[in-house]
Length: 174
Image 1 (cartoon, rainbow, N blue to C red):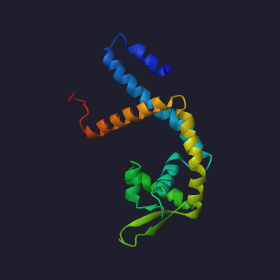
Image 2: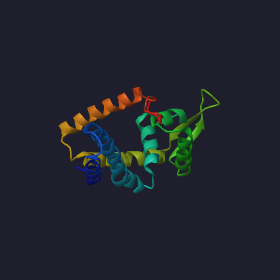
Image 3: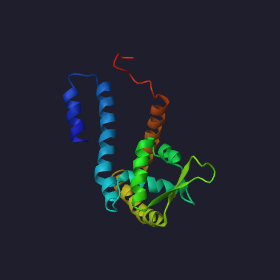
Image 4: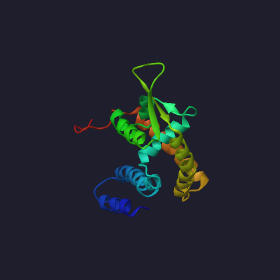
């Protein structure tokens, strides 16, 4: 049990009902897990290759698109759940590093295609197996069965959260 979450649960023990504490603790675990994965596993791995984690996400997304390893900026930002502004700054950094190239679309002059360069493809092909091993190592505290259960539960939670977008409780309690 996380010390921070356990302490929070104890502090709320006399103030809230168990179901309220459980909800806060579960969200706390999710947030802390995401923070730890990013801080100690994902971002340091990307930094070893002079990338930010988000930049690696972009070149990995282009790689998973398959040959010719290209997508529009809109397809990229939708795939990565980013705003178009955040995507533009990532693309600028990656283009400056020579890992991607933006070219006018042959189908629509108003649009561009983002391509992995040969250097970008070689880098993602080098880093991807290491990234996957790193993720496996991070998850190794869970058995294969536990990983499968967690995957199913997180998928269910994600789908539920997406279906309830905009229905959160507001400052007025409804």
